[in-house]
View 1 (cartoon, rainbow, N blue to C red):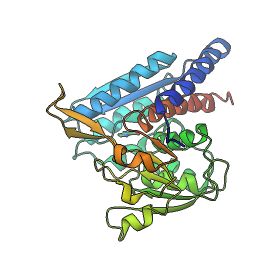
View 2 (tube, rainbow, N blue to C red):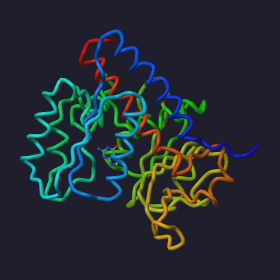
View 3 (cartoon, protein in one colour):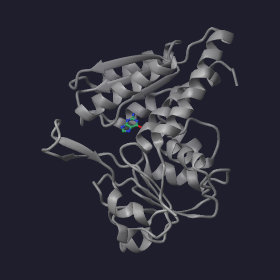
View 4 (cartoon, rainbow, N blue to C red):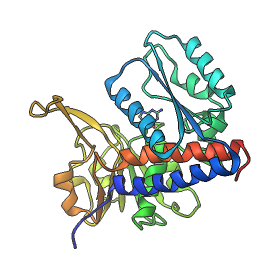
Length: 296
Ligand code: GUN
């Protein structure tokens, strides 16, 4: 049997189509348009692309969106004041401050200031705590997208050994927590590995489901993967490519060509988790709007 390619573009398009209908119904029934504010501090080229994609996706499905660009010299105080303003703004139901922020900004202070009701990134310590103990809150978009991807592909993590490669607050830790929950679509046995893990390949090759989120281009080779495993590649890395017009290309954390023949299913990067992250951001904005207005 061939390898199933988990196509995040198709799965996310389905989610977005469902959201578009839901947004139309909310507008018609309640006269409310869910709204997202995306804040970018500085001019990191990759972040500029992501922010543009997020705003464009809002427009496609009928969400109100506001892009706020701040100079890279903007101070912590200015950014905190902007968040306070958005926390109070009735047109805004979701607030996202693009990571990474310039080094003079304390990201944790910024994420902590976002009203948890509008925390569509799920990076506020309250949201992270809610995720940890498995109570209602807004879930971080990339990990949420990974779980939705598995669900849409008919892969049930229950009882399976999931190995997460990476321990970031944005992906590694929350995806491990989500899969550990006593809940449908989770219930996995989870191992977290990282750059300091000894005998890494030995551990990753015991995974039924391997989630690569270590941020190193094509780091996962076939010797690290069990035959018949499911591999989810969360990585998006820019590598030099003189043959391309831009001078670079995007690759994942997995050596797709070498690894895919061994897998039962694999998500490529680009075209896998990336579009799912955006779909879940839109989903979270609609959820936040419904909760704020008591529409659920
Ligand atoms: N940078 C990379 N991924 C993300 C994300 O999910 N949210 C934010 N705010 N920044 C990011």
